Length: 251
Image (cartoon, rainbow, N blue to C red; front, side, top):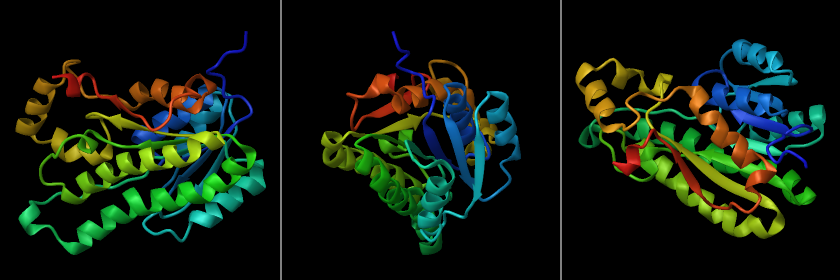
């Protein structure tokens, strides 16, 4: 009986794959057999070494996803190199912190551009290949702030709420065409985006007290969910936002 989680022969594009959650997802997909195209604006040498160590092929594309300018070149280079895009993981994202009353238009636009606008247009560009084949997997990275309000991150909360809605809309349009669109909502993970929270003793303590698992998540914790949503095991899963949060939403 075939392994439904086997990703051999599939090509996965993972944005923001240089570190943190993106790196964890890229490595997990590689361990399941996928070829990895890593997209980011900083060095992805460490990710490349981990992917190759898992026995998978690796290709890096340097791009600043703060605008949609690199979108078509990313898709074109991937298709030219590997001939197909089977999995797209929209992980790249940033956060800007300030009280809502003081939040600037610059910080609003910067976050919304990379977290939501570029994610949509990269999905749109990759979907042409997926829809033509009649199969494909899109995995968006949402957040606990897709469900909750949070504090001091208005544009991030808006962008991640938008990602949840966009995931459902695309699923409604593309499910019948063989393309699965789902999202993962990470809880509090050890990443660059959460460094300020982890370095604040009061905030760190209050966050840990709310997590039933009793610890911050590590990038490796998200790999299983990504492999599931990228594989044929999830062929009848459409438009879901899957929390990987150590039980945060259950409390």
